[in-house]
Length: 402
Image (cartoon, rainbow, N blue to C red; front, side, top):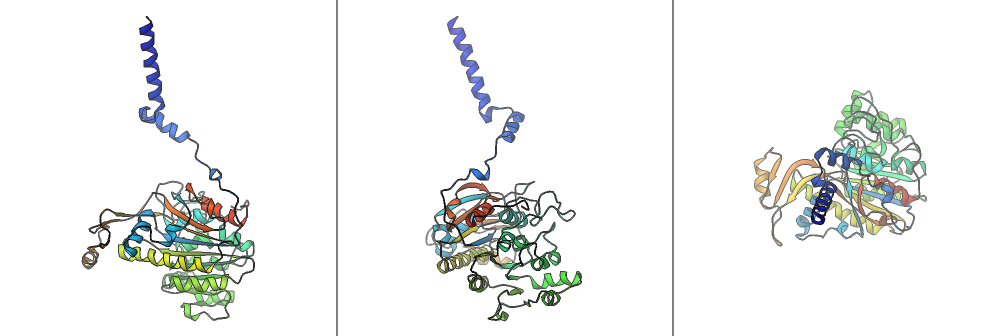
């Protein structure tokens, strides 16, 4: 009898244990359990007291996920861990999804970083109550708008169109990232402060065409705001305190250093956002961009005082690149010239040591930091947490306009 009771007790305990293991739960039960699990709030990412930042510089590698950063070091230096950013002391992994999917585009990705609010792909710094191209969501207040409100100088530099999703998310609010003719003028019609002080980027032809369709032009906008919109960086006068340059391309290094020269004059501090394209659909071009960006970051690091300046490097989303071969001392991109000569439109690029699937991907991206407030960057977190990192570095709290 005792043995029978013991046997029944063991069976009962085994059944209970199996039910407690997700792999043994019924599919519907496991799914509901997963949904009911509390999500770690951003406030749970704790850090010790920090020095207050006067200045913040956000470096954004568009599509610069972990695989791309690793491959850039191998491409540029033939060894892992040779990029300057890979030696910054504070790092975490930033989750980039939009509100309704797993994989982000640049619009949602950057909007989440600079507003602390996730939205839909294609939507720029508006809440999720909007719908792309059809309905506006509530505008979400950006770190640049907070900086303007607090009297800091602000600057945005990009190798891409200045009205494209990533830079636009800092100064504009739109239900469709393609509306460049509506987006660009918002830089000069700010909701807070007097608008972006330094604006350097590309995309002049396409933005100009959309402005014309809307019944305006660079010249008209320039006259109305009393700020010429130059075509070349070299056209900026030495005395210009709030220059705007929209060219067909942009020298990111020259533009960033010029912007820094202007912004560092601010007695109250500044925000500078710098984007460099890191898409690796062309693997050599994309990886070289990261190497060059890293060199610029290292140069900027030497020009600032890390006691009162936060440097933050991250990406808006990851990309389908993997290193699956190669040896130290060898050529990472072996076979690239032969692939390039084929002028192939196939989205899959197969080199000897590298495979590229020309698409955004959903895994977390690196967030690396150094300077005042950098110690808050650690662990896994949603990309919206980076907004809090910047705000807390300044000692600011978001208001109801967030």
